[in-house]
Length: 300
Length: 300
Image (tube, rainbow over the protein chains, first blue to last red):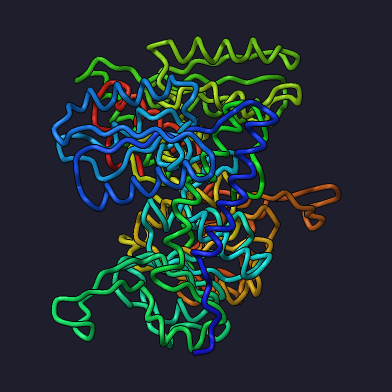
């Protein structure tokens, strides 16, 4: 193995320290305590773990954390009226509704109801459009995390040939916007792409975001490329004992690490960046809501 | 010359007939006469010509055309209050403010004031975001025109390697969304791209939207590629007499036509499509405003 392993956990820790410093500054210089409201509907264990982790990290950086738990059978109208109340609450600068919501609730209605000014997930059309146009605002959390890791690794991304595999609204499409803004030549590949290995072989930067375990092979990686693996897939691991599993990315890590200059591991790569970037977005929205210029080191 | 010359003028004429049929249907079946309001500030001759052409074509397809001419020194607040009145007017389904506006008026404020439901230019962040997410709404006019020409030429675009040169908010970025939605592998190249000729040589579909006369050379075009030239550049034409000029695209047309399977000329290619697509968007918004499903043959 020759590649540098990009330590997302350490980067996210350092980012949270920067965020905590911005929280201190907002409190002491402007009398603002950024506040993040998290809404969870139902008792899905994975969502519960994720929401607890968000709440814990929010408090740790010195922000106010507001947690709203609603029963799985809550009426859609009740959820929407809670969001409206959070939109109106001046102590709340970010609103996150943990997805997925139960089937009787329309997720698009939920997203439409969130005030774009407080939409720290960057799910509302207005914020998605602002990222494309280049206007200030929150930026999709996982792509923002990938961008920060890339900038840290490479410095300027100008003129790099970036290939994104996967075109989801959550990762692929916002990632394309951010890499284009950083002056990469950007290619988006996906399930209908012809000759994917050849497309990937031309990339200086590979972003894998397809959700298929280890589908990007090691010999597709150009020597010296930087590989960011967004996939988190659970696969059987009989070598660890009967019924055991382990997490793998979308990239065949061991083989890719033979060619890449640097690569993110799974877990411990992109994963830890997502919540940290959610907190970063809350600083951005708290700043904009109060007519302040958001800190440049926390956004795209 | 071997390439088929794509006749945008004829395609736009046929499109306007389809639009006129949809206008008839909306009138007779739903009692709706689609209406497009065009606002022009000042007396720039090019803008005047363009606005007159829009008004004429709007009336020709049977829509209501509302023209508002404001003096060059109009107060920003007055323009914004006109837009607010148009937002509230039920006879108006599309609002277009001719750009550029005079320097004392902030174009972003103008765009922000237009109700996204009536934003037929697809300039508002909410509509830009909807195109990325895949929600129904108006689509940027010039990219929509390019898409229609490509579909007409190629049928399905699935798996085609599309290269867009230029990343403007008006053309390059929305074009990327539309081609991705049609299952192309999409690359966006621009001024910072390394080795542009090689990037273009891999393209089955070339979209040139840089605004630099004839910068895309003929030998960059892969044999059999389809070339869409969005550029409209005025250059000196001493061969036509002293002081004479002519229009050329971003592609070296004569040389590219030796390699391409099909290519749009300048003028007469993409140009005529833009206003036709503005009318198509007005059908889309008039439908959505009235709770009707917009016709699928007029959008992306």
